[in-house]
Length: 83
Ligand SMILES: [Zn+2]
Ligand SMILES: [Zn+2]
Image (tube, rainbow, N blue to C red; front, side):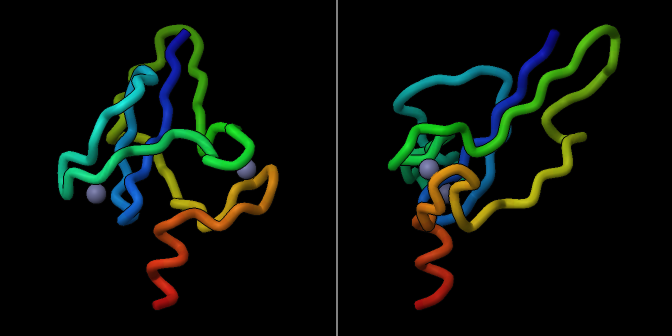
């Protein structure tokens, strides 16, 4: 089984990864990446694949959410967009 996680920096750059790691930074702007909601801790997006499916993070379709689907917390990139 393969897992992928979406991580997003506070400026809204999306990075999809095979593994979760703390303390990583956006390769585009250097801001910290988050893979889960800062309020409730639920993952922004996770995928599971089974078997021999050949996928890379670049194959995955992902629409960046503006809010946490669990608690409704507005993510920092959505707030910046409104300025
Ligand atoms: Zn960034
Ligand atoms: Zn939340």
